[in-house]
Amino acid sequence: MAKPSRQKSQVQEYVEALVVAGVLTLFLREFVIQAFRIPSESMCDTLLVGDFLFVNKLEYGPKIPFTHIRLPGYRKPTPGDVIVFDFPPDPSKQFIKRCVAVGGQTVEVRHKDVWVDGRKRPEPFAKHISPTEDPEGYTNRDNYRPPTVPPGQLFMMGDNRDNSYDSRFWGPVEMDLVKGHAMFIYFSTSGDQWWNGFFNVRFDRMFRPIR
Image (tube, rainbow, N blue to C red; front, top):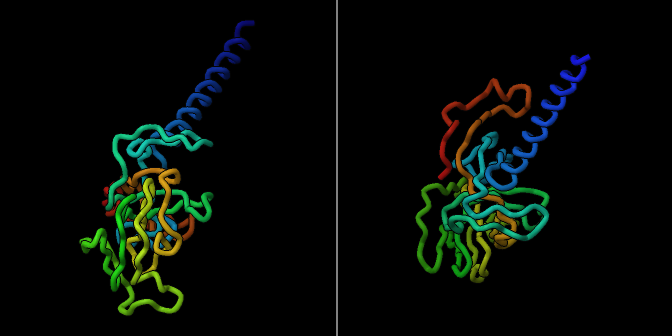
């Protein structure tokens, strides 16, 4: 008679363990660390299509889900940080770009070069694939003079400057949309389909810190 009770107890233990694991996973994803996959070439060559990375949410302070409340972080975003954020025109999508300037700073793009507060910014990570300026339809790409970045907002640009849809076209990003700071690549594949991804692993990119 005791055997069914013991089996029920074991099933209950398994269910409780799964529930605890699920809650812990959700907590870590919302407040500590989140995985992200690079879907486009806008951050080449820093990040390639098929890179999988972890995003640190504690650094800038995690947001409480379904609210606009952000818990305290241990530092604020600074120029040069690679950041994941909700896309301002459509917050259901997530983008990853590099912070070029923060609130109170003025950004200019002069003949493809970035100037912040009147000083040319050294950018060894920036990539230009077009030798010419301002092709039709991209008048903000190579020469741009926006107003000063508003307080609490970030001016974001992709490292692949000639092939990035970023703050030059849709404006700065409010801090409320920021998800976290990109940490390191934990997996990378050049496979374009799920069935061949594991046969095209880029081992040299795995566990590479993102700078």
